[in-house]
Image (cartoon, rainbow, N blue to C red):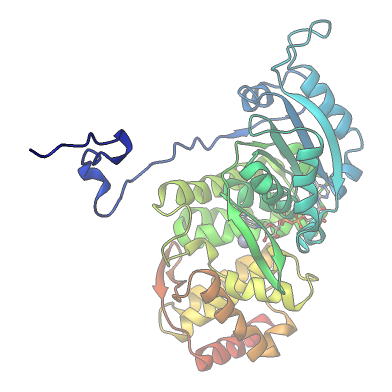
Length: 404
Ligand SMILES: NC(=O)c1ccc[n+]([C@@H]2O[C@H](COP(=O)([O-])OP(=O)(O)OC[C@H]3O[C@@H](n4cnc5c(N)ncnc54)[C@H](O)[C@@H]3O)[C@@H](O)[C@H]2O)c1
Ligand SMILES: [Zn+2]
């Protein structure tokens, strides 16, 4: 007779779980509510858009203001404090879970704040210093550069503190604030470091545009021309008809044009099927491969908007060179850019190989496969997977002849 030894519990063979075998593959959709408000005087106490944007925000918040904006609007920090105070049910019995503004800081405006990690890191540090959690929010008030740098700092603090964007330039309102990207410049390359981080809320207020220097006011319209060329021929005609009013800063004419551009950018990003840019096609980067290179090569003396204008002009003549676009359409594009007082030429275009290297950087930036959108008509484009050095040289030569 054999004696059986009772098995210790830990030695029991575990029950089989078939789902543990093989590849684990589960699709998980992220519920993202991308909200944009267009409101006048967005920081006035009791502003409905401001209150709605902060409705589910709790605890400490911090704000960063672009230095040029702070200079043009000296009472802004105080206004912001007033806007937060108005969120409290009453001054005598504050609600501890209501959002509270713990700190306001000025950061350098323009590309200065995107120079390396410094300012993004500062934003993250301030979140820690002032106890901003993922239930709180970072508010960024400024141009596209400030939104990018502050957004990146917020995105890496606690793996993502909510960012509320208050864009103050034409370009930030008609394009950049609508996107889901942020980042800083590094390794002599635009936006080399950054991430995808959708804004918690975007609050657009036309009032800010009144203090924008003319160069930056006009620069933002290059992105309107770009999106019109890619997607909206009637918008292109509207720009042709309204160029004089835009140049003279007629807000009644300009505001709906800026808003249409913002809508088209936003629609493409949110409904175009690739918000986080996993695929190769990147139509919104039309004109940008050379624009980013021009910005870097000029040490940012050429602002983004103006660089994009030159990039659009160059891409138009590249499309002509590659028999995709009629020469008269390219000429019409140049005429519009000029009537908007935007540049179509820069001597750095003659740097040849140095500028052409921008294409290789762009290819790496978009993930290794080259794809660039070139126009086939106004409102229509096509993906191109190769541009030869000869096409590039010829396009530069034709552009130079048309630009003078
Ligand atoms: N994240 C994205 O999806 C995205 C998209 C497009 C562009 N961008 C980035 O946006 C940046 C360009 O943005 P931009 O054209 O707004 O330029 P910007 O942020 O450099 O601002 C231009 C200048 O205007 C000043 N300024 C801003 N608002 C002002 C106001 N109301 N009154 C007075 N001065 C004011 C700024 O301090 C700066 O000196 C670039 O870095 C570009 O790469 C990002
Ligand atoms: Zn751009």
